[in-house]
Every structure is written in structure tokens, then in C-alpha cells.
Amino acid sequence: MFQYVLRRLLIAVPMLLGAMSIVFVAMRVLPGDPCVAMMGDQATSGALADCTRNLGLDRPLAVQYVDYLWRSVQFDFGKSFRQGYPVSDYIARMFPHTFVLVMASAVVAALVGIPIGIVSALKRRSPLIDYPLRIIALLGLSMPVFWLGILLLIVFSLHLDLFPLIGGGDLDGVIAMIGSGEAFTYPQDFLRAVGDVLHHLTLPALALGFTLAATVSRLSRSAMLEVISQDYIRTARAKGQRERLVVYKHALRNMMVPLLTIIGIFVAIALTGTVLTETVFTRPGLGKMLVDAIGARDYPLAQGAITVFTMIIIVVNLVVDLMYAVVDPRITFR
Amino acid sequence: MAVVRRADPVDLAGLRAAEEPRSTTRGRLRRWLPISIGLALAMTMIVVAAAAPLIAPLSPSAQFSDAVLKGPGAIDRHLLGTDEFGRDLLSRIIWGARVSLEVGLVSVAFAFALGVPLGIVAGVIGGRMEMLIMRSSDMLMAFPTLLLALIIVTALGGSLANEMLAIGVALTPNFVRLARSLALTIREQDYILAARALGGGQLRVMARHVFPNALYALVVVATLYIATAIRTEASLSFLGLGIPPPTPSWGNILSEGRQYIKCCPWLTTFSGLAIMAAVLAFNLMGDALRDLLDPRLKGE
Image (cartoon, rainbow over all chains, first blue to last red; front, side):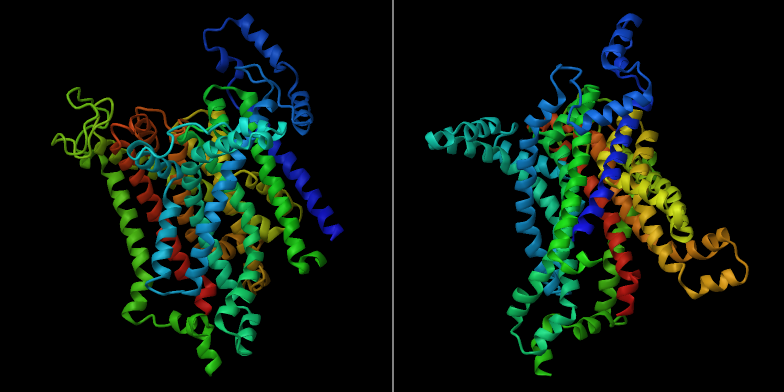
């Protein structure tokens, strides 16, 4: 077990390093001068030289690269070109918004996707159950999240006026109340603030959750089909076990093991989805921050956001691999 | 027997039986319906894209000041309505099919041409070469497709060629991985041994034996990635990082229409529908092709 964890950790380090190098190459080496982008074509050469010096872009590339890696490891991504605040502060402020969106949509995706996948697998090739469910999953897979988001906005925000059109609620306030203990001294205010956050979260979570549910249902369908064809299921049936118990006791539990690996893919898709979802719903978060930063040519902010996204994905994949080893004892001996 | 009957809904014998009746009408329908729908949708899209100048009722950039933000059918000449500049939405969507299809096909062809040779070399030759290719591909794999495409487009600037390049590069690691895993299986086959015994060099073995045997599985997956490429293109355009207006692409029509969802929901509805139909077409085709050609299902 220890050896496996160590080996897996050692693989993650060069991957992270490589991914960060790609970000660096894309942002610094490819054509396009950040200072020209920021100050415009009309900027004087003196102003441009000042800008280049301030950003440290006049140093040799190798020095910039090592500096970037060293600072990134410490979560120091420099200061935002536009606002002048440290990028890590922005990220820290935006992260909770993206985190709650990913979590809420994961709940929607799991609640919708896993049962659909299981039923679809158990009723395989049933024209009334499997086929319609698979068609729905395929439609969900083909529907861009930003379009579903807009449709939900048109119906539930504009026509029915049930949910807010933009914003993410006062999540910072909620976090501050928990931190200061006010959540317990003023529970009514706290609950109101939480309710407001959830109110803002509902439509984005549904939009992202439904598109993710399509992937989850397809993956859980194939996971279930895989499990159901195993020898131990046949043994359970051969000993006269009732079908319901075969499904609940033997199949479902074992299905969770292959399903676990989905989490890695899931987080990657969900994070990409947040970029689009947060933009559609004009919600604060890492995804919207990234798009805004790119639009404003705020390179440190964009670079920071991309690095954090990549770090999250690599770390989640690492954790999933480790969890996999814990759940499936055979892996530890490899 | 009673036990087997109890397990009826999911037992393997039943499944096997269900796989077999290829000659029955239902069996044939089940096999060919999804692929036919997918193919029909994809063909429609290809024809529409190719014949855009002939089919589109009006020029996609012509502005009609008397028809700004008119709904579908409000004016006879604009079947799907008009946008904020009085441009015909139907014509823009028809011309937008070109962009989507071009990006979808070219970027997948690029990823295929770059990724498959690398994957086959990694699988057949192995050793340090494999290590180098696979580790580089793993690094790119750490980025979700849209994120990697977004990084590249940001660095290069938004244009049709850059978008194709960005999505092509972002999809490449998927082809490297698949081609390698196929090559690993194929290289163990007897016919590869025979080819080597006859004096076939590495290059000949890879080009004449490994590649043709991996081809159909690669094509199936390529079909699915066309869907991914079309969706990624739409997403980039939606984020304002794709093809700059006034060139119509489904993503930028939808993005511009977003400002008018209150008064004119048709702008976002029809462009989104077009994206969904295109992605669905290639997903259906890829899925159905995989079901038809998947060796594991064949074996059953």
C-alpha cells in the first residue's frame, strides 16, 4: 500500500510540473505581448518598457520559468494587471463559489444519473425503459450546458420569475458568519443568507447537473452491465437468492468500485462546465474569473486560474487512484 | 432451470439471445435505426454547409433596418426571425453550419494525423520512445479539452484556423492513447510475427499491418470526437474566444443572442438547437458504429 501511494505521488509531481510548463509556454512564449495587450497599440515605448520591467518580463525566459514554478507552488501567482490585488486572494474568494456549484451539480448528477444508469442496465434492451432512458442520456450529452442554462433562465427566471437572473448570493457573508460564530448567535439571519445562496444556486446546479447526469448515467450503465455479468452474481442467483437482493446486495456495492473512477473524469468535466455555467448565469467563480481575465488580457489572473484548475484535476485524480486502492484490495499488491 | 428463470431479466443467456437475431426485423431496426438517424442528421448538416450559398435565403451579413429583432414568421422573408442588426437568422444558422463542420472535421483530422502515428510508434517500438510520447500526452490529458483549447486560443488569438489548431491539439492525446492501446494488442498477433519473419521492418509493420488493423476502431472514436470538437467550438465562440463576428458561427449567434433573451428568445433557441442536432448526429453515429463494431459485443 505504502509503495503504491508513493509511486502514485511520484507520478503526479512530474505531471503537475509538465502541465504547469504548458501553461507557462502558452502564456509567455507564444506570440502576443501582455503589455501591448494591456496598454494598447498606442502606448509609448517608454511606458511599454516600464510595464515589461514591472512584470519581470525583461528577465531571461529560464529565470521567469523557474520563478513562475517556485511561486506557483507557494500559490503566489503575482498581482492582477487590472486591479492590482494578489491573484491568490481572488482565487481564494472565488473558489468557494465554484466549489458549491460543483458539489451541488454533483448531487443533481448523482441523484439523476446513477438511478437512470442502473435501471437502464437492469432493463437492458427493454423498448419501454432502456431505450427511452438512453435517448434522454444521449440528448443530455449533446445539449451544451450554456444552452440548457439559457433555456432554464428564459423559463424560470424571465417567464415564471422564480429564480434570480444573475449573481451567486452572498456566499462570502455566509462563510464569514460561520467563521465568526454569528451563524449560531443569529441563526435566522444565517438561514436567510443560506437560503439566498441556494436560491441563486438552483438553476446553475440544475443546468450543470443535468448535463453531467447524462455522462454519469452512461458510465453507471456500463459499470452495472459489467458487474452483472460477473461470476459472483451468477453464484448468488444459483444459490436461489432473490433478484432484488442480488441487485442491492451484490451488484450495487460492487458497481461502486468502477463508479469511483468516474469521479476523476467527473471533476474534469464539471470544472470545464463551471466556466460555461458561471458565464451564462453571470455567477462569480473561478470559471467566470478565467473568462473575464482572458477577455481583459489579465495574464497573471488567467494563468493563476488555469494553474489552479489543473492542480485540482491532477490532485483529484491522485486522490481517486488512492481511494481506488483502498476500496479494491487487489490493487495494493500490484 | 427455475433458478435461471428467476434471473431472467438480466441473465447472460438471455442477453446473448438478444444479440443474435440479426435477421429479424426488430434486430435489424435496433442495429440500424440509430446509425441511420445519426447519418441522416450528419448528411443534412454536410449538405447544408456545402450548399450554404445556394440554400440560404439571404446573405448572412445583409442588414434589414426594417426588420430588427423580429420574431419567427413576423416578416415573410425571415422564417426564423432576425437579430439585433436586422440580419436573417436562418441564413446565419445555415452559414454557421459551415464553421461548425469545418472545425469539427479539420480539428479531428489534425488530431488523428498527429496522434495516431505517435500512438502506434509508442505501442510498437516501446522503450524510451513510448515513455516520452506517453508522458507528454499524459500532461496534455491533465487539461480538459475545452480548457486546453481555451489556453491555446487565448495565446494565438481567435480565428478559424487557430480554433481548429487549438481543438486539434486538445484532442490529440486521446488519439495517442487509443492508438497505443490498440497497437499493444495488435503487435502480439501472429500475423505481425509472420510479417517480421518475412523481413518486414518496423516502419512496414506499423504502416502496413498495425495501422490498417487499428483503423476501424480509430474511425469510430474519431466520429465521437467530431461531436466533441463541434461542442468545443460552440463553447469557445460562446465565450467570445472563437471566430470573431460578423462571421456567423452557432456559438457566437447564441452568445450575441444572450443579451436579448428577454425580448427575443428565438436567437438563442434556434442556434442552440442547431448545436445540439449536430452534436447529437455525430454522437449517435459514433455510438451506433461502436455497438456494431465493438469486438466484445461481436464475440457474444
